[in-house]
Image (cartoon, rainbow, N blue to C red):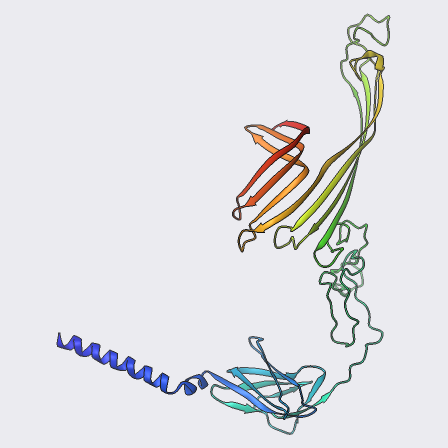
Length: 391
């Protein structure tokens, strides 16, 4: 009992002593973890911002010089690169020793070693660099058919930097991967394209915004042509084309020509790469013109034999025409609640039958997790186009 009590008292005494040491010397304890760089900026020093960049972690620390040019940086131990922000340029004295491993690199001082609990003094002069508008700068174009910028930027006034408010249309240089000028077949990583090129970025297929940085448009068109010439057993019917024929089967040839054009216009808002769209509008008209069928017997084109043996007609419809809006994000994973109303496809599978239907309806959707979605459709009208397919 006595040895255990003595050990407990000893541990309490050691912990209490350590607490008093830390509370009694807080400045000393902090100084052992951090160092610093201080000095005086000479010349036109009012408002100069001194920048210290850790050469290992790339962490940046800034300090603004006071009216007397004095600045101070508190930094963790490490190697730093010292520079100043434009429009000022530092003039370090190369005859002066700033440290054993310091390297003078253009307008910066590299390998300035900061140790724990030590303050390094770096005094230097600065001069103000006059900004001149760059001349004859080659303008780099964005990839593909980007069109005109959707967000204007300020004119470039410095040769080493420029403002880009349209973050989608950043120019890329032409890059010849193998350096043989196309001897192996022009292998260019950054291709310049056209608005009508479907294999590269284009403004009309949603790769670049048309308004601001978040409104995109998709235009697409599909043209389908089919010609079918068939021969299958066809009865001569009660009113045959050839009244004197007595055979049960008549002439079995038939020619069908179908021409369908579908256009799609879609306008949406949002960063759809990261999260669901904020809102969307989609219209998809379809034109079937002309449809032509020519058979060699009555009753094939229409049950009414007076319609003859050929038919030409035109069909126009809206395959899709709806508006969708996201009501809210449920959580940080961008699970959402949205509502869509208009002419839209409905898909359902029952056993081995796949049921697809284009109806005018309103649908509420909610993604409750990364892999589960809940959707409810409320029909608004009874007009629909149905297709049943055996799966």
